[in-house]
Length: 193
Ligand SMILES: [Zn+2]
Image 1: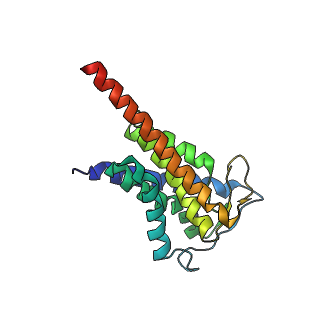
Image 2: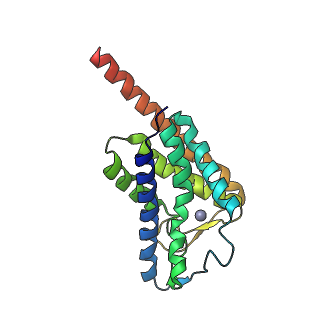
Image 3: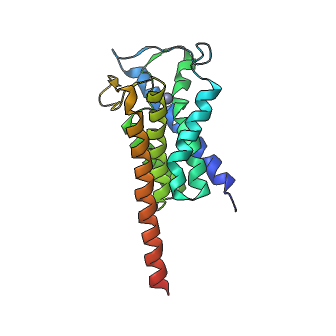
């Protein structure tokens, strides 16, 4: 099986840069911004967290049965946390900007524009990875996200049991996208034969 390493690294790097860049907007949000804790010194970024975020993303994208989206699902899911890079600047900003539906929509648009305008599975992977990321955050008790930032900057609280709905939503998005792509493939095969 051939894996397009260049594509996977390029798309993952773009996703990480996007999340970090989007989080920079949070510097301007007064009065919601706060002095952000350094993720390296307060121990919030653990190996376990990284590994399980990847697994949660892999699970969501496994339904595609396509290695490139499976791997991207895992990588995107952990790279959502690139929005913590702003914390390293030791300045006031809005926490967890990447954990926003608006970021999800922007990431789908940018990733598809750059890496494949017709690649529906790629766009679906970008959004599903975000949902699966939030699922694990909620699972471990990180339950507050600025879900609608930059339009509404207060954090929306969730119940810990809600993690399952986020993961189910991620899987459903991937199932629907996979079904659409398969149907399109079938149709184009019929037309070409
Ligand atoms: Zn997170």
